[in-house]
Length: 244
Picture (tube, rainbow, N blue to C red):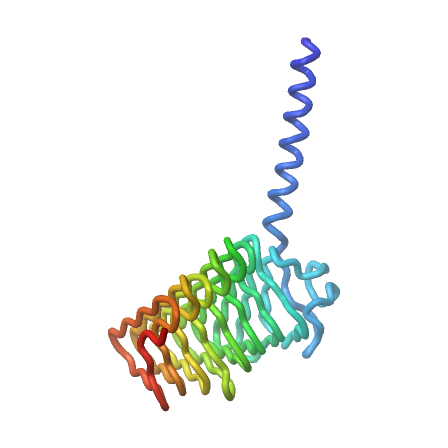
């Protein structure tokens, strides 16, 4: 066989092997939480199969109450599912779709609590949160579409999204954010902002349920769009349109 042809075939074969390995690595593993109540999220021994929960993994919490005391990320097709009436999870800081695609699912009466949440972090990041039934509690801040070039979407079908004293929900921080509420309740003691920074866009689609903020501003420095086809919206102190 021609030497140059043999060399070309070998290089092509090596490239295919590397590509396949990279693809499999990007997909991540599927892991199920089997740790104790209040166990450490980042301890690989608390998962089956055992291993550190990588951002690209498909992570299932079907029982128990794991705790994560620093930043956790879903990326590159990774997701977190919390499901079950007696199931809960705490993340101090959670990044959904930080630089790639990531998702969080809250189902079947489960509960998730966070100090802060970023949905769609850096440029190219896209995050999705879907609550079909359950409770999502935010202590300080939730941003959707955090940085320029990022995007995020929150879908509340049923259940409760709540913000603690002074907590804010910002839809379109520097990037693009969408919130769709088909039911359930959204209650924040602090601000609700759509389109916070110049060049950002925030969209809220209220179809049913209750939406309540202390302060609400549509189009703060960016573009804010609010559509209501059902449900009830309340701004307990003031609502602003196009602040700057």
